Length: 549
Image (cartoon, rainbow, N blue to C red; front, side, top):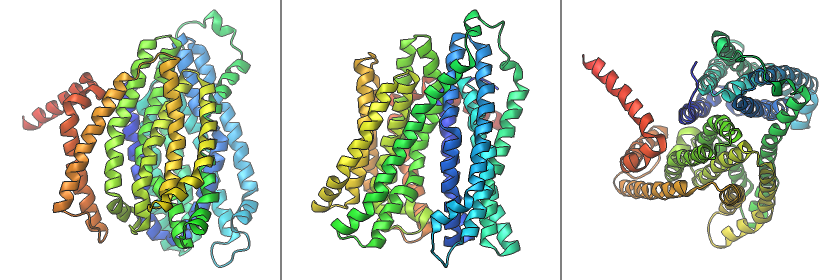
């Protein structure tokens, strides 16, 4: 195992996460053909409950572990670093076991709360059973998350990222093939869904064993160097836990605010669309499902970039900040924004332009939902900026700014939701555009405040990022104009999945080729670094020459 530089770690983590998210989107196509609508609803019940309890069982601790480990590494407190990992591992296992028992014991009351007195679909017994099956993943995933946080804190990004690919691959194999085999053998959809749910446990277990094997094989890299420093001997377990909880809390708050914005949507969107803008209930629910579920899955392609950056960003900025190396902190911040925007801006614009074929490929119906998605994808871009910015602020211990920003975000969303939806309706555009505008405005307020704080209070220059962003936007505009012209020759007319795939590939290749050709010298080499580019080109040339010899 080798430690990764900031750019290496960011690129590896980003592509690993994009790959896993892509698999997570694609497997839906065969899976829902196997289990159908009722089975899909049953799987959704189980997974929603599981996701909520998984958040409770980890409460932001893995990223907090990454930050604490990075901090102690920077100070040379290697013995304390190992204490952090062992304490975190024990605590998370105990807490995860408690959450698992709660979920198993209260699975039936939860099932009753979900379905109530409704008859004719999934039964309370069905839902109870699949909840208990997927609960087994809580015995594995939290420990996996801690191991990842430990490796990330030590700057071993490759192993951590590959474990995500391993987890997703095995999970999807069990979900698709396991459910198909079980349905073929038993003819029972509930059993098929239960096997699919168990895929989370299998994927997590294999990924955890993969990481444990890597850590064991390279255990000499983790052995503390020398004797403990005098300062280390004074660090108590209470102090370590204080740091972990202090760093974990903001990550929990980010999740809470994200859920709060979703709850605002859940309680207002359908009502406003039906009561104030004349939508029928069916169309209103199509809009709602696009905003909260299906559109969000596709937005993951963009937000995955931010997730990958966070994995590399947190330990590297923390390390430089603890060392008081302001120059390197500034460099990492600018690199983060430039790398994110270089990929995210053209990707967002391209996905918006190709909303109909993309929706047709994954979900089949490209009517109103695709129209909503063509606007909603821009929320993915602002969410990615939001995630990276808040991570930067947490890396440099500016927690007050994070809290104030998050609080303001919820207030802005609450205030703007109704008036912007009504305004959109009155000026003749989809009222859902008002909802999306409210979300984007609320999200933008958070990272704008943070960027102003970085510039004014921390004297961190973002001039390089701003100049690069202007160049990226200009190149993206040229790409868009070319796609519009291509539309005159090969119209974006979708009539089936096969044609949608052809259109998406054609436009994707043309758009990406034009954008890369424009940006290669002025932006690509700068963003990824000449050394990284030359290393990649050197490897490619060596492989080519070996193939010719």
